[in-house]
Every structure is written in structure tokens, then in C-alpha cells.
Amino acid sequence: MSMTSADLSLDGLHVLYATMSLVFESFFYGIYVVLVPFSTQLLLKRGLGSRSNIFLFTAMFLPFVLSSLYWAVEVAEQAVRIQAFFVHRANRNATNITAYATIFNAVVLFNYIFGDAIVVWRSWVLCRAEYGKLLFIPMVLLVLTTLTVLGTITVKVSTFLVFVNGTPGSVTSVINVLQVSTLAVSFLTNVAATGFISHKAWRHRVFVKEALNKREKTTRVERVFTLLIESGLAYCVSGALVLIFTFVQLPFGTLGDIYAPINAQIAGIYPTIVVVLVGLERTLNDTTFWNVASTQGASIQGNAAVQRGTISFIQFNHDPEIYEAQQGQKSEGDIDV
Image (cartoon, rainbow, N blue to C red; front, side, top):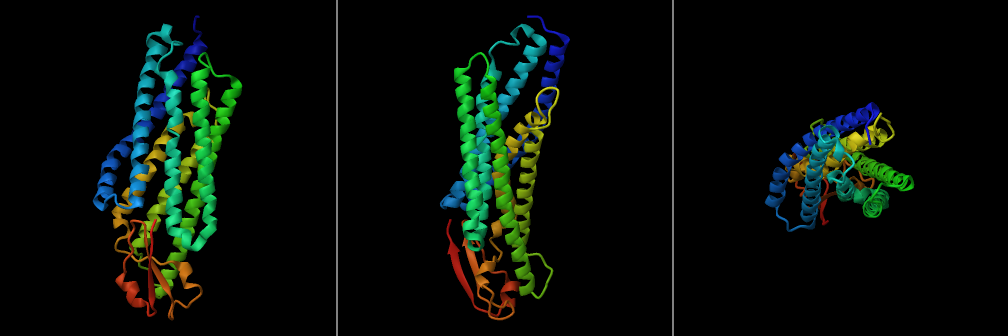
């Protein structure tokens, strides 16, 4: 079948958009490759004896494997696409690696589960004493994200195996709904979890300022809170962008088609970023962390009961300045995750 100038134009746009996506995706994947050895060293130095470290290592390693395979397939797919569109156009409609890319596009969605799991785990560890059952909100959203991801993967793989000569429009609509649902629920999961952590950080800041008679010095625990909140907000912004871009139509596809591979890499890299950021602040090993809820209205200036905890592999020790400022008795406890 002869190709018209309009067909050539669309092919050109397809390659252009795919190239733009691949360039930015490669940038984030490059950051990923640099950070993984560093974060792995941090975790191995602490040992994999605790459940939290094993969880972090798994949430960091598996997405890296998926992201690496996904990036390699994207590179190969782009090379084949350029050859088929502009070098050997007779092979344009022949079966090649681009047909199998659908499977990898589906499997890489597991990165959203790992990334969201880190956010939810982080909020549960830091905030469960204050917010209790409210934390089931991000947990339920995480379950919904998992279900939509599994549904998307199932439909995509089934479509690839059953419909050899093209996907029916109705099936395409189902896939689109599942993918948009995954992005929406994932975004809500991150907003909810990051919101709890932000509120916890604010309460902690107020508590410390009152305990130190409005002293303005920022403690290390506050700096780590800031790092966690800022990384969470950046992840939320990326999730919001990919969701919005899904509805922005281009001459070929949508803006979401360009940004989705980039966001998949960001979702994969997020657990690694958390490990590195907290590691740069010595994972709170030399800081004091108060459970604000444990004061239960007691006077901070008087004999307040302050709870100091160990959260997973994050150890919380005395900050000498705050410790001396407190005249009351402190109760110590461990929170094992």
C-alpha cells in the first residue's frame, strides 16, 4: 500500500515525540544508575537483618531491574521504528520488537506500586501514633493502585496474545480507563501520605520551638522531614503532570504518551531517592524525634511526658540541647516495623 504525505508526516511526528520522550527518560535513568550503587552501599552498610532494610532493598532493586529492561526496550523500539519508517518502509507494518513493547509498557507499571508503597510505609512509620486509623486511607488507595495496575497488565497481555491483527476499540477504551485510574489513584495515594507527613512535621516543629523557648535553630530531624516532604511533593507533582498530560491531545497521540515513560522512571527511582536523602542526613541516627501526641495536653514548660522512639532502621537518640531543655521525665520506646 502506498504511503501519502500525511502518513509520512504522522510517522515523523511519532518518531519526534518518541525521541523527545526517550531523551528525558534516559536522563532520569542515568540518575537512577548513579544513585543505585550509592543507596545499595548505604543499606548494606546497615545490614539486611531488619525487615525495613529488606523492604527498602527490594523496593529499590526490583524497580531498577524493571526500569533497566524498560529503557533498553524503548531504545531498541526507537531504533527499529526509525528504520521501518524511514529506511525500509516495506517493513513498516511487519511484526517487530515494537509489538512486544506493549508487554513491557504494562509490566513497568509495577514501579508505581513500589513507589507508592514507599510513600505509604514512610507515613505509617512516622505518623501511626498520631493518626491511627486515618492512615488506612493511603493504604486503601495503595490497594486500589495495585488492583488497577494488575488489571492493566492483565488486559494488555491478554490483548497482545489474543488480538494479533490489532486491538479492538472497546478493548483500547478499557485499557485507557485502567491506565488513567492507575495514575489518578496513585496521585491520591501520594497526596494523602505526604499530607500526613507534612502535618506531622509541622506539629513537631511547633513542639520543638516551644520546648526550646522559640529557639529558631533547625534540628536534623526537621531537615530530614523537609527532605522527605520535598521529595514527596516532587513525586506528587510528577504524578499530577502525567495525569493532566493524558488529556492533552497532540497531532499524534497525547502529551501523556511522551511523559508516561519519564514518569515510570521517576516512580522507579523514588525509593532510591528516599534512601539516599535520608542517608545523607545519617538516617536520623543522631536526632531526637518526639511523638507529639504522647504529650496529651501536658504542659511543655512543665513536666511533659515525651516519647522518644526507634522507627524501623531509623534510630532516634538524644539531641543534647533539647534534652537539657526538658525538665520532665522522658519515656523511651521502640517501634519495630
